[in-house]
Length: 112
Image (tube, rainbow, N blue to C red; front, side, top):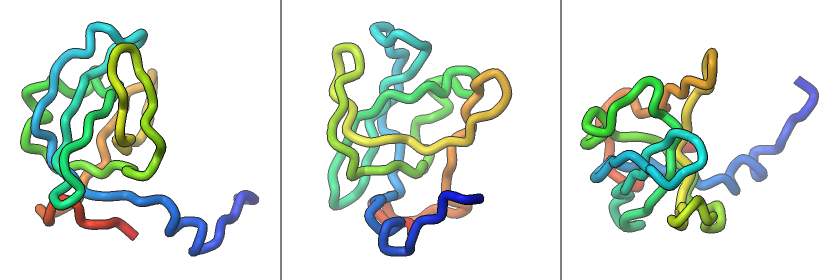
């Protein structure tokens, strides 16, 4: 890999643990997606759009802890302002497997 970054550059990316509180089909999105509301503890709740429809149903996501980048600027996606970026591994045919902690941890806990 040629594109090395420094530790201080990595630390600028604020990745936190959150729990999915709400999940619904995001009908207004251009690509199949869900609208999620995540609880990040002291950081509060944040909304995002996630293209994870190939492997997950909305009801399977509620209560699940996930990892998300919380320090990107808000981004307009259809009629919603996305406030974080859910992390996932992109597989064959665009299927996304959500990255999550191995064990339950406190919401808002920083990854680093």
